[in-house]
Image (cartoon, rainbow, N blue to C red):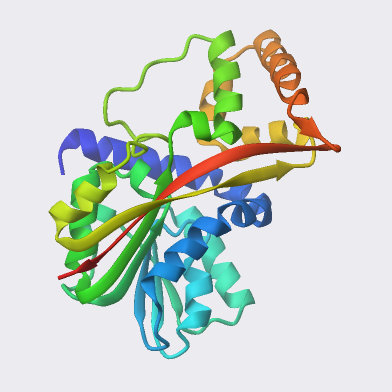
Length: 282
């Protein structure tokens, strides 16, 4: 791997290790938010009780933990770069008494598994953060058995994801934000329709298709939204760490003004959109 890509990988590992306590704190809320994308992935891969499954970029364990309960005679391996995230996934697997779930900390670009090891590969919200998207796809397909199914999800475009753009646009109005280089890891890196589908075709999948999952994510209040964004969302925390107290206060005031207009019956609902991409190995 090129030194630049290694640097990105190491930055990603440090970031997700740092945020693993926050993700554990907000896990129930976040997993409910992301569940529709996981459900769509599970629906496509048509699990059999004996399937061996690789859940890539598993984070705190989903959808891999749900899948493990559905393949009692099979096995699920949860892969992630972050040891901090995987420690949470292990804890949850023990709480659920899942004997067929294990975790592996490794680089997606160098999966430590033989060719044709898995019946299914799932990857919810991982591709946006991989240093080399094509290499990651190549590795996933390499370890997939012939006829095996792969399904993944990425975020759609900014206009359809108010849950994050509300915060980031408000920060951008109050601070000068650096423009990331083309192809740098980020929320909307893979939002272009057809982008990941083409990556998967190049990696060797056939019958590749994509669909959209949309919905609303509900917050108890603007304060609830503010607190969560400042504890879980890496780009928010990174930007806010560079703001002085006066700027932080102004950002919160502007955000409150923006979001109060979206409150309804005492709760805050913001739209989201994700793209589900799936295919099978020849």
